[in-house]
Each structure stands twice: as structure tokens, then as C-alpha cells.
Image (tube, rainbow, N blue to C red; front, side, top):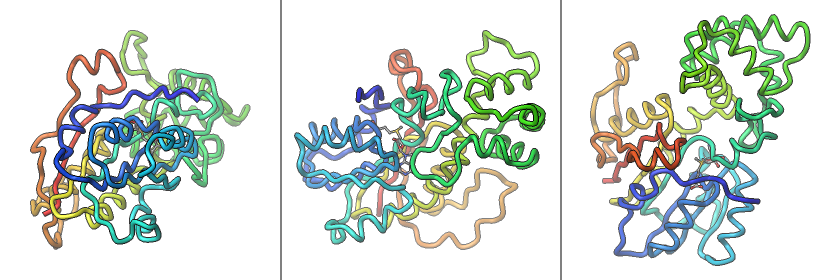
Length: 311
Ligand SMILES: C[S@@+](CC[C@H](N)C(=O)[O-])C[C@H]1O[C@@H](n2cnc3c(N)ncnc32)[C@H](O)[C@@H]1O
């Protein structure tokens, strides 16, 4: 299997990793192993724990494992990060660096059989690992309001109601069974679609379905909370996110854990007791990819990198 994923903001990620000592590191989103490979080659690594819920990560892990023996893969969700470590031979270790590079890899998007992309004809799947529902089941069985809510909440899609309405109209005639059919329905639901627009009209709806199916926002919230407990003193939490819903969760988490009474929206309830201060924010503002990276790899364009340190 060819690894088509180009690691995003790799130089920036590496720039935070200490060079002086033997490190215990968790790559919580192993993907094609791009980060792990570069880190193993360039830093002193005692143990590298890789996590990925997608079974295909094993192929790339096995390749890396031929050269590096101090690595271990857990084919699991990263929300279980605490259990995975606790039940492993690393239970007594703490970690110097934990990295999350969120979302999907190019190996997932570019494989039409996975159904992540509206650019390729494929089945409506979008499962990263073993989720209970796939996109076909949702699109063909959820009621209109529920569909509209998903598109609005997880895709911030302003035409969510119209898209949901048209999905219902179409599926009565025939089940909606491919990414292409769904993407065409969305295109017809969005007024004045300008084909020169850089953003395809199905982008937000596909993003929403993917987030819902894989429960991505809850996964992130749970994993952040658990990861901070696994960090050694001065250990680093490095997060690369690709859309605003994820970035807001990371930003809120870092702010709360560093003692700020800050909320991403004044409509959210008061924060109450924030609990102990456990982190120091290292990146006051998120880092963004350089222009040349975006030119070479347009998929990096929405990336934001945030780093916090355990105190
Ligand atoms: C952007 S890719 C990571 C790419 C990787 N840094 C590289 O250089 O090849 C994100 C990966 O995280 C995995 N992933 C996303 N959410 C996850 C979760 N909740 N638990 C475990 N893995 C997850 C995906 O399956 C995907 O392989």
C-alpha cells in the first residue's frame, strides 16, 4: 500500500520536541506514520506509542517497525488513551510529548471505497474505524430534522435545512447510495453555486457526516483531558487541527487548564470551578502553515498548531 499522506506542519511540530534527552512519546494519530518516522529518525526516542483507530495504519506501522523496534501500535480510539497505556507494559511510564494530528489522512480521503470524498465516486461509508453507523445508514434513515441538525452543528452549513429536505425527497424515489449522488443533491440544494468557488458546496455536509459518524468532537474532548494526566512534568501536548470546531475545543481546553476563565462564546454557560491549573500555554496564537507548504500541499491550508506544557 502506497502512503499518499504528506505530514502537515512537520517542521513546526518537530521544533517543539526537545533534542537533549531520551523521550517517551505518543503519536495519537499515527495515520501513515509520517510524524513518527521523522521523529524516530531525528530524536532520541526511548518508546514511541502509536495510536490509530483505522486498521490500515497497521500496514504503515509494520513498515516502520522493520527499522525501529522501540515502537508499539494500538489500533484503537484515542479517547481510550489512558486505558491503553494502563493495560500495557508502559503503565509505569509518563510521557514527554503527546501529539494529535486530527482529522483524516490522505490515505483515507484518496481511497474511494472509504467514501470520505465527494471528489471520488464511492459508497457512503466514512467510518475511520469501527463506528456503529455509516453514512449510508444516516442519509437513508435519519429524519429530516436530525439530518439538518447534524449538517448545521458539525458542518456549520447554512443551507442545512434545504439539503436535508432534498435528501428526503430523493431517497423516497431511490436509496442514496454513493458519494456522487449525495454530492449532486447537495449541489442542487445550495443556491447560486459558483463553480469557480474554491470551496465545493458539499464540503461542509461531508465534514459534518464524518464528524458525527466518528464522534470526533467527543473523542477529542476525552482524549485531551486524559492525555494531560499522562504527561511528565514539562511534557508537551502538541495538537494540529483542521477545522474551527476542533480548534475551539483545543483552545478552550488549553485556556481552562492554564487558569483562564475564557469561553469561546458568551452564550455558553459560566465555567464554574475550573479545577487545578495543569498546563501552560506555549503558543499564544496558533501557528499556521507557511505559504510554501500550502502551495505544495493544499490540504495543509486550514491547519492550526497549538502547544501546551504540563506544569
Ligand atoms: C491527519 S491523519 C494523521 C497523519 C499522520 N500524522 C502522518 O503523518 O501520517 C489523522 C489520523 O488520525 C486517526 N484518527 C482520527 N481520529 C481518531 C481517534 N478518535 N482515535 C484514533 N485515531 C484517530 C485517523 O484514522 C487518521 O489516520
